[in-house]
Image 1 (cartoon, rainbow, N blue to C red):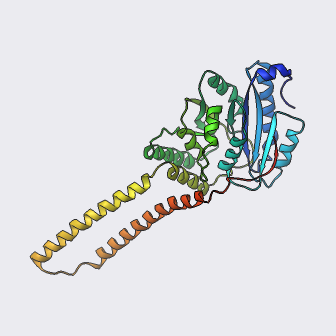
Image 2 (cartoon, rainbow, N blue to C red):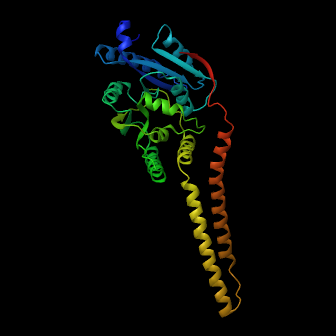
Length: 325
């Protein structure tokens, strides 16, 4: 296994593109992934591309045979590195661990499940070589995903775009090629609650989209459930905008204004027609509505305050248990 042979002098002249693969319980798909990565490396060498591929696997606390397979794949190979985290920190943190380690001219992030075809990397690299610094893959179609997931994803990115002052790339995931400039910028962002898709947009640099059709998982099952996706969405919104706080301020102002107007109406009516007994039902409705709005406002404040609390602890984002670099 491995790429075609190239002498030392030629290797020194080639740029390096490191392929970062975050993994969590992916033993069922890794053999096929290894085969396709090796075939890709051979094809790149045979085509005389001005770069070579290297592979970096970050295992995020897998409990199956993922680590043993990665160890076996890396034996005797200088082009394969791995990092095993001390526990499951989440995919966002696993990607950060890889970004911290990468020392190459460019970085490609790709999932282990082969929904994003690694064979597209040379086309992304051609755009990079032409001067673009962030080649992000935009999904034209998404096989194996439910209608509900597609709709909620579209609504989320629409909402995020409206409440932030940066351009958010829609219908994109983590599959992209980043120039070393982008990698160095991402290394400086040490947020605890990370949303990499938004961070990729925030750092800027010269971007271009790359349209592709996303495949269904080659094996195994997704590690994301809707609760985790909602948390990721909240991380994205609270990390890049204070719009929810401003909305609650606006709602509070409108309700206060309505309360003043209603108080004046009641005052005038009392002066003209005398005292009447207010209805119990209307009073109960007003109390419940205002109480609900107050609880929502406190919840939004709590989300922001909780992130401040976690960030101020200044804990490391992750710990490494084992590595081969």
